[in-house]
Length: 226
Image 1 (cartoon, rainbow, N blue to C red):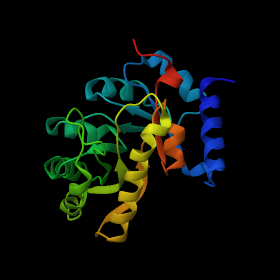
Image 2 (tube, rainbow, N blue to C red):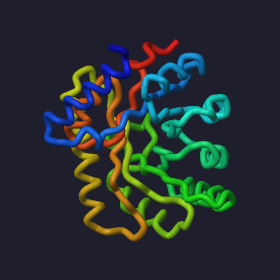
Image 3 (spheres, one colour):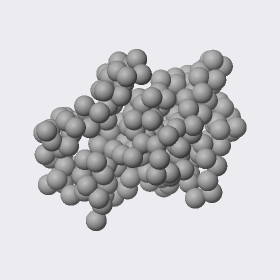
């Protein structure tokens, strides 16, 4: 069994164990710093979504792998001056955490005649070292984005505090899921909250148990980063 099959089996087993349809959980293979020659076999093994953190590196890979039927997700911190590249290359941007950034994405997407799908990044742990809007300010962010024509919020994303034990991080995943449900009940115009991007190699099963629809896995697929 290859690494992809092993991860997909774990995703399926975990989803079924908590009464979820495995089809509702999608794997994002995090390919940052991984050379193109090592990405192609992963695509051939069945990966359909690739996640990248750095705009310039991602652009080179997306151009080189343009013949592959994969979706590209941007999962790193996005600076406003790089928004035009993110809009050009990515199907989903996971890391929108300010109205200013959202407006720039909207502006660049309008130039291309595109509606850019995004997730709002929430800093559930309140860590100064991490990007993301606070849970308390998430509603204001969504309302600030809701009037923009060329950007579409599809859900929430988080990078919780790091713990060795998945069960220790699980309450952070639960808090994002609860926030999503509370905000969905408010029926903010033009805001859809279907997606929860949370969980990585060490804790994705706990994230799935709390409702993750996108799990971002790199190390378990590509090994430790150089």
